[in-house]
Image 1 (spheres, rainbow, N blue to C red):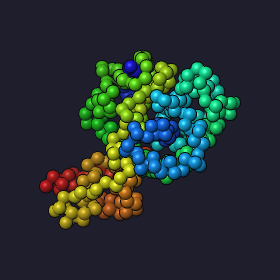
Image 2: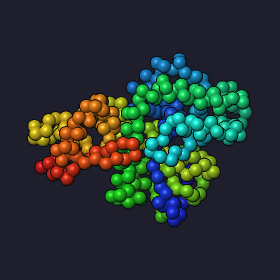
Image 3: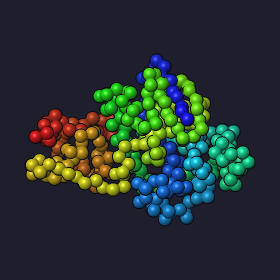
Image 4: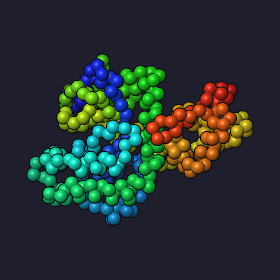
Length: 317
């Protein structure tokens, strides 16, 4: 079925990107139900299973149904690429009991609410379980995960600047298209609605979707969750290939970093991608920038590095 968001007038300029730690945390529970769908995450899944006994696994398992849906109130629309988990959890704590009960019953069907999701304190128990899950399974890896998501947002921003909004939407996923002033998202569930993207449309990269998804209820804020680029490299250090002549001039690591920086990236992202420390990457980046081969610019709380025109000419030669 299809979800359509109309971008009327100012809404075209209201297309924004955001990153949600809470969305990633909740959507990763799909891997509890069906790990075979996530072969690229197998190193992480194996580690998660070793700590499962320390978590409220019974409750966490109930937050995903057999169709791999999760409650909408646990995947709110984020507003920034710099969203913090603590802020999202604080906002979820203010969710009304009626909304929580509605979404949980939509998830499991009438009369089928599992025992761990019953009771007046269910929201507090859900948030406590998710907090424990975050600390055991996500916190040790979040810098690597966030670097991947931030890299995707940077790439999409360049796509808009260089090729336009329609090309960026076409590159998000096979299920997403911009037709005229309407964004179409083809979803797996039996959902079909059209609504204005009042206040703008938020695009959220994720490591836990096969293509793209949107909220099942039209009353929810306009949002598209899509698969982030580069997932296949998340859990493996990347090789650092470098042209032979340039490696002889600069050294293998610095020449390899120049190759990597065809797309702007932060030192944290590069360290996660290459499986080395941020300190080691920063030493090379500072030397390359001092030599006029890199330029840098602040993006939120991160500093992004990209090749200079001189570096592009060196690599082209």
